[in-house]
Amino acid sequence: MSFTAPTLEFFAELSVLVGTPQEVGHTQHGQRRLIPIIGGEARGAGWTARVLPGGADYQLIVSPRLAELDARYVLETDAGDLIYVHNRALRAAAPEVTARLLRGEAVDPQQVYFRCSPSFETASPTLGWMAERMFIGSGVRRPERVEMQFFTVN
Image (cartoon, rainbow, N blue to C red; front, top):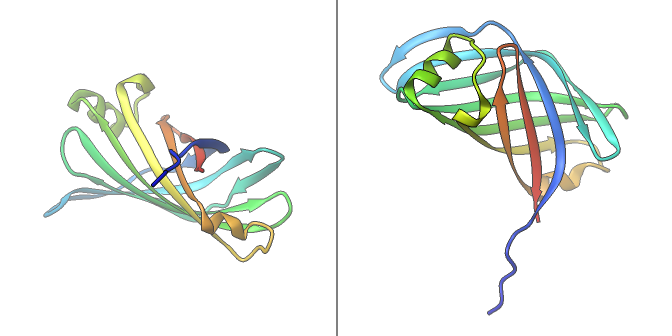
């Protein structure tokens, strides 16, 4: 059998604006937080979109080093198409770096492992292909936004 190794192709760059975290507290699974998504923008090859307010990033801080992220929000393209985004991610860093992130401080992105696996749903006939592909990405957490790059896995 002959297999072809997957390759990556740039899909989009996002800047997602976030609001003040809602701290649920320490539960039996870890520290729960909800971070409102209040806006932002996305830019791909030949298209742009805005991040609609109303989404959220549901976070579980499972240890002083590791956070599991589960963000859900909607993009509206410049053509008026809506895209539902479900982005799961892992963010890992030294405990002191994680503590700074949780306090909303800026940290050097090189000190943080932030990788994600976004998926997309849309009613748009021209964008329906996105539901038939896998995507991966990387991110950087800034105090007021999250910056990400997504890649199609070919």
